[in-house]
Length: 223
Ligand SMILES: [Ca+2]
Image (cartoon, rainbow, N blue to C red; front, side, top):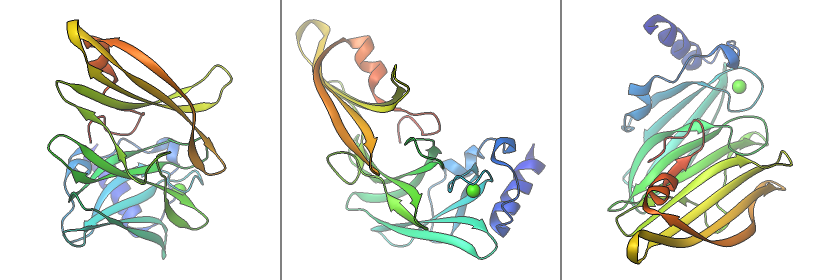
């Protein structure tokens, strides 16, 4: 197992990019959970970021107190990188990759800020030869939360028409264990997430706890 991961890591580092994505093993969790230092750190060797069917290497480094950098290696001499600016402490932590939008290639999530209990994430997607920001419908960064008084989360679903939708639920605790709030449903249209509906929701405490965090396969739930 270790040897396999090492081989994958080397392939990604060297940019050979020859291993089919379907055969790639899970991300090395110890590397993925480590915070980036000033030097490039390979954090993911199991994701296909550009959607060509082979795995790519994802690296992170904390360039400064306010800048986290992401680099993706596709092959020899073929890399792209992007700087992520933070005004919230810049933890610069890799939070996973996922088939998030409906297009080919995985999106990359990086935690670039942390409040008292609120993580702030950048999500990147590879488009037109560049790493581009994938923005929430109402902001550049994405956030979830969980406290005794409110909880917030995103869930990727496929609706009955086969379309990818992203649900954003936010609820506040009211009296008698009742939680009330809103559900916004986002669709990915013309290269961005747009809100297609908004409704009032009511949840029990157990249901409210369950909706908090990220519910997207490949993204860590709480960071
Ligand atoms: Ca690839």
